[in-house]
Length: 402
Image 1: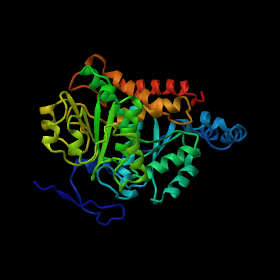
Image 2: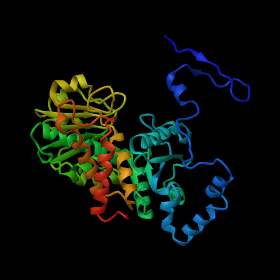
Image 3: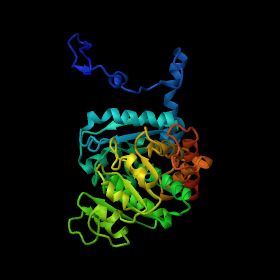
Image 4: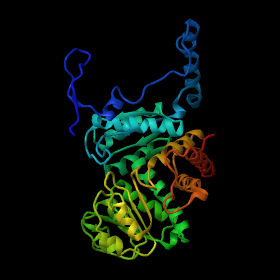
């Protein structure tokens, strides 16, 4: 049945653009977030404290001791969610305005799951240096920066340059959030089948931001071996068409020296991780090792349909909420920033990421089963556990300032 079309009037009295009668549009009308005061403004006394003349005392104190900005403003508990709109969900390069519904969504997830305030910032530039300079100039207002939906390979350079220039956490969630939750699920899957990470050989489909970050992170965590495949096949040293990022990945991964297609790599592999949006033939899944794991995370269509994956795999995960074992970044980023902001960390280290992954995995506890290797995004234990683990790791690694 076709959607009903409504033609509401806008504020000027003219007809607004037609839109479908759809609950999604209804929810988004006017946006999904607002700014709310945390202090009363009931009378002139309140006004004199919150604004002039009282506020001048606080401004003067911060000017004399800049670190007081963290105590007397919201800086230490607010994150900038920054995008250029070039890699939004599975929609691709749709521009900054069209990215705003996603950035607003990210901001309310920060608040709902981690108690962290966040401000969406969509930039009207795709130039790497312009993005870096803009964020550097905005940084005095924020305690952290979450980079979001910025296309590869630019996202790697933007994150690196910002980390070099800023003394607050800078975190590209499409890379590291995905990698952290993937590691958490993989740890529990290995535990369920009586293996360790070192026993496993993995294959990653997709050599973009997520695929590259997952490969590096899993190796850092002790995975036995992993091969990464892009549209042209396995990212291997014998290829002459690699970007700088892929050349680095070719050096770090694929100890087995495989070359050729994704299907070649999957033969005998223990783990498939899909972050590509492609389709993997059933025969290739069937050729994986016994008790394999299939994490097909493309949305809305997994690289391997769960019904097919379950024929051959001991553990199946997707990126979708309507199947068990959803690999969802919301399990990671709210708690990571909550913990980092709590101790006023200067950056997010590899140790902090490992701590976050372990904390997520540990929440599962006695519930561990083939259909439960990762907690639900609505498990209220997750964000506090991640925040505590990240804060402790920050202190242990010397990047905490309180």
